[in-house]
Image (cartoon, rainbow, N blue to C red):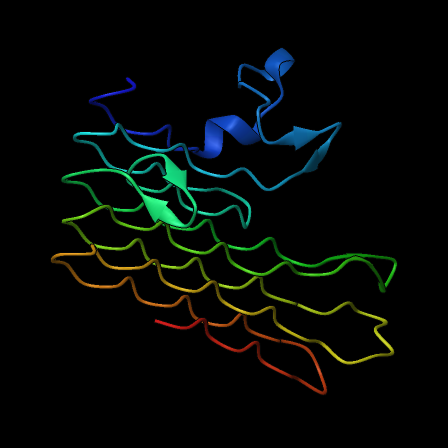
Length: 168
């Protein structure tokens, strides 16, 4: 709700097409897309969690960089997407983890999502590079802790370059 309530948290069901029993909310055709968590209410409520590298929702609505919410925590950023290889060629690079949502006046920032992993391909010619983790959300203006930054994604194949973690 506008005054009291939690923001929407995306989950695995949102990565499934409607025809297959899911919501399809985080799909662009058959490809996954980033979905940001919803904002909590103005008085009380927590931000929702992101998905596919989407940002966590803020504890309440944000105006001019200030999150308006008395008591609430930011949502967690969604983990980044894993790289996709077809016939040994990279077709979709790993994506960064989403940033954690910000707390209101009293509350904790959300944790950043982990960076996407690059598993490499069987006939891979280039370097595997993991994506960066998302930054942690800001603590409450009066009280609270900032969220932890997400860990960088792993690079599993040859010539590895692991991703960089997000800021806490």
